[in-house]
Length: 243
Image 1 (spheres, helix red, strand yellow):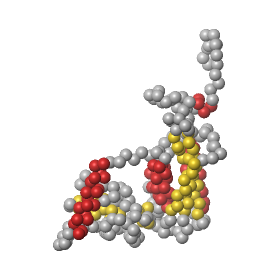
Image 2 (cartoon, rainbow, N blue to C red):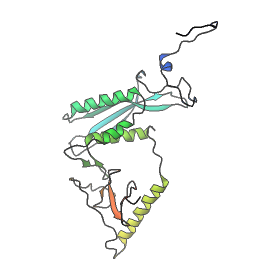
Image 3 (cartoon, rainbow, N blue to C red):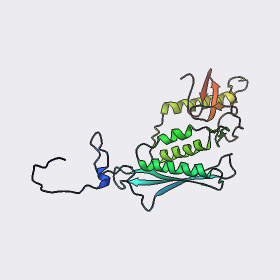
């Protein structure tokens, strides 16, 4: 205990929430700015977003609701962070593990810190029975991975995951799409564009905007990889074996 050698001229009671806040390394963030941690109490009303996903694994849709808490509302340090998640469906087959998953994810949310790691962990779960393709041609290796995909989209929506657009990559993709369209429309251009068939055991999604027969991209999990300019190129994310 530190000895007080000077005359006490005043005092102030430090609140528990304020005392638990980490100090900014640069010292630019005030000490009274509230960050997400397990001592933050749940308010009576939370902002919520509900996402509907329909998979070929069940006749019934899955409804995922993510409720967010707004910290430091009305200040320049205002931020929206996920607080809890609920998953509901008429299909009760997966009730036990879905309930356990929601409780674990909610606990991680309330713990604070960087919860974005949940996205990659969930999207890396593969179903031993095989995955399926979503509308648009995106491959989902499991139901857990699709829940992770919803969580990623929500975190991007509230600004928790930053996605800076790459203008060069976007221009590259558009150029490749235009070249593909020109070559398709030109008469006598046989063999100009070839595609590698996908090894997936499920049927292709007819609503995909990419060429039929395109193979699966291992980076963005979309059936958009074709053979162009002597190189396998993804028309969705721009990934290319030629760099």
